[in-house]
Length: 96
Image 1 (cartoon, rainbow, N blue to C red):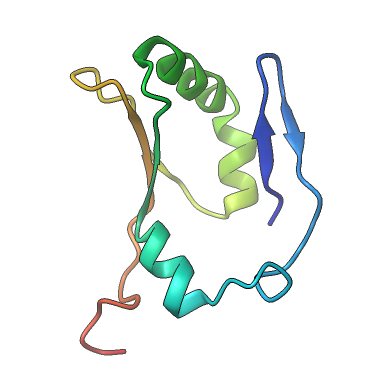
Image 2 (image 1 turned 90 degrees about the vertical axis):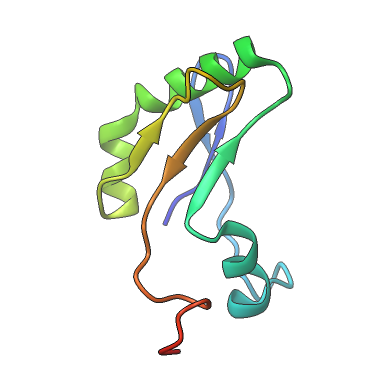
């Protein structure tokens, strides 16, 4: 799956790597850190909302690359924004 860097004017692809090359272990690190959502926050509400809207303007290609629909939450009552995907099971599931 491609990962992109958000700039002021575009999305730029980041060079491909692997969890192993980066020293990331899926169960120990990735699931614990990502859980089921991505929160975006810079501590500056206006910049957060602008970054969220820039990502949301690319919603269709991002969801296509991701492989499913995402839950886009601008969170008007907050300075941060959220993009969620509900994962059934995962490291917290009693069935794992």
